[in-house]
Length: 259
Image (cartoon, rainbow, N blue to C red; front, side, top):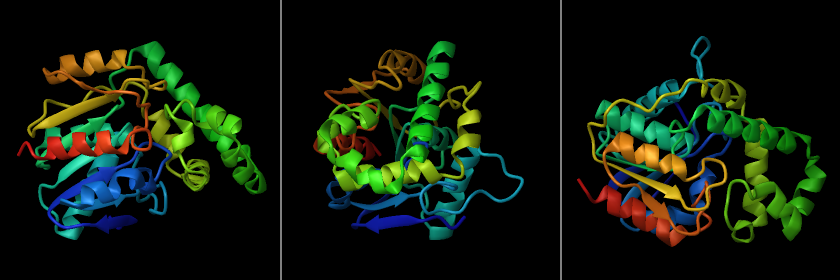
């Protein structure tokens, strides 16, 4: 597939995959840190950001989105890249590791390790965030992003430190969430989602200590599934890249140095 993406740096290829309703710019806080030692390719998933939707007849699921990422890498001529993802992107990273088509995979607060009530809570919160993003007139978006209280209310479920998220980044993220054509169908596919198959590539799972969307008790299940300890990202929320860019970049770099 032809997907929108940003490429920076030199070295071993590293693919970055955002979460549901987001876009590649979610990785901007860590992009240059990673590009100092990797060829970093941050992409927009099909139906998100500036990427076109999936072809007609193809259902939005984490697996079909993983197919699209795999095809995208083939088009670019990138074989067995390192991959890192957040939330939905974290699940996709683990799915690609289960296929054995990536060199290493890093998953930050990946979906799929929830209980039934936690899944219902997650879907409800995401629907509410989407409705809010679509209801805000563009002329008020900047006012919301620049007001500390309104910013905390609108982003507190996703990040632990709303003040570290720039107004520009918040406005762009709100617009990406509002207009993502793949959002609704992808969210519906979360029902009944199970963890991927056993990984064939080295994996690292890290979880925001202050994740309010996928509470960190889900990390215990992820640890059980993976047979290894899950790293806790101290002071970070569900989208940790803006909360602590140095920590997130270090975890990804260490993980991608395993192989």
